[in-house]
Length: 284
Image 1 (cartoon, rainbow, N blue to C red):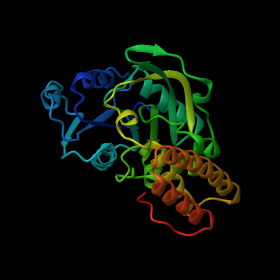
Image 2 (spheres, rainbow, N blue to C red):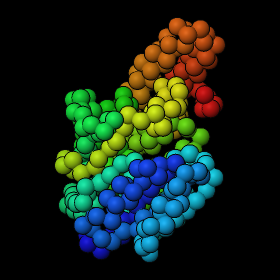
Image 3 (tube, rainbow, N blue to C red):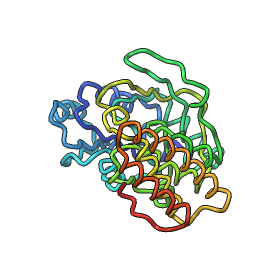
């Protein structure tokens, strides 16, 4: 496993203040055979000047007009060459043995996609995770319908997995990871290194979970996509429909409280069509 080239995909947009911590955590890895593809998604801060300090042939620098994290990740994967891919968000960090231990675990247990456990930092302070966010292992498609159970910065997968489940949906402004991991959990068991080897930062207003409105609408869209994909068995379809019903009910009730009656009717009608097996447009 020492000779496995890991392609690290790191998209960033106006995160110069935090990016150095992510980069330093890559350079501190005990597994030394990696390439780091940094995709600057149109930053207007000091990102380029910061990247100039990391003069290493293993670092591939790409820059594009601002197109969002999904497009940036897709561009990064396309430019990478390793048989194994690891994702890292620009405001997160890895502990030094993250790649080494994750590669060994995948090799030992035969997993093609795997994540580590993580430490949560919110507004600069470590917080305890609620039990419902505990990461499972193995086959857990039904559980992943309820909430996103895979964290990008914790995740490593083979290029074969990417070929089966990628790319990220560039039309989704948020919940693109929920959408991607639904496909992953449908096709693959997911390994778990139970050690907390990833540090996940949150609580800032610039994060997608805080600055993109109506996340529930994008989760509804992801569920409709997986239901229309034609790859669910009867039990999986029933579970997906039940969760879609729950999310649509919550969403439409919220719309009605806010006077958005037409939005509520539109999404409810789309749900009814999906439930009846009809194809629907997915640009909610």
